[in-house]
Length: 105
Image (tube, rainbow, N blue to C red; front, side, top):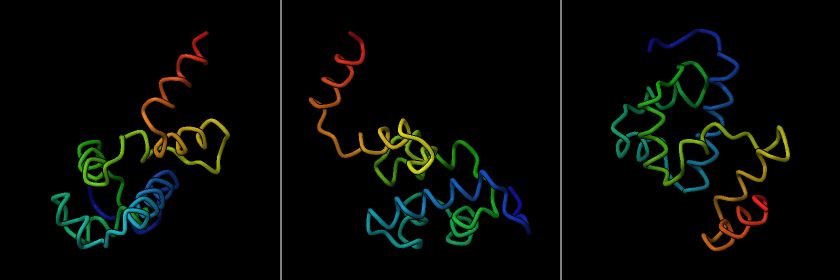
């Protein structure tokens, strides 16, 4: 997708989220781009909100970051539910199963 001159609001939020997850994983743009099969310029444009990423691109980035696709579209500062989704990334599988069981009953 072509680079925009003005940030797309949702693309900017997704880009900031990717950047935060990339930094948390201690990856440089160069390393994430290379290992994700993207150009550094394309990844930079995504992180700045100047490129609206496609779903296949988001899948590649999520896979390389070791997160679910959902994690790229979760904005923990926006709601308690999204914060819970974000916190679940660090939970052990047993904890997640208990939460699911408790929520289902």
